[in-house]
Amino acid sequence: MENQMIFAWAIIFCLAVAPVYGQYYSRTVRAGPRVEKITRLHFFFHDIRSGENATAIPIASPNTTQDPPTYGTFYAMDDPLTMESELTSTLIGNSQGLYLDLSRERTKFTAIFYADFAFTTGRFNGSSFSLFSRFPAEDATSTIREMAIVGGRGAFRMATGFALLRPTWSNTIGDAIVEFNVTLYHY
Image (cartoon, rainbow, N blue to C red; front, side, top):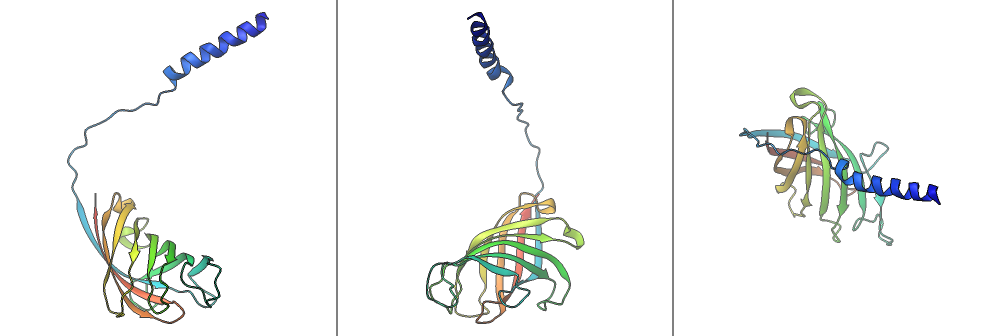
């Protein structure tokens, strides 16, 4: 009985002390003025869904008879970023992320994108920005689309901004080359 009483008092003591010592350290500091920077980037994105070296693959697809299924298909991507529109031009980074095909009409591609655009060479080596936005369908290949930049790391820490996309080439399989003109606001 005495052992049970000691145990009970020990538990009560631990529970009483835990709130006192269990609080985390926190201090609010007034931030000084920050200088916002603007960076403009231009590169080409290569989304390849066909062949042995595909850079975007379906990871989930609806149970339909459509061949190949497009509407509702979920893709994982690891797409190269280059200086010019040719895939053999200078590789500057890659775009890794996910997109969901939302278009029921097979001739128009509409998707929701989440991707991290990481740079592996040059001035922004080790930095990246995140894009999370809707890619709207348009009739003309040359039509410019706008997507939102929602964050970044490295040189692009706390980035916001927008990307203007212009598809320069695509085929019926879903392969595409897209020109990116990006404006980033960051600190």
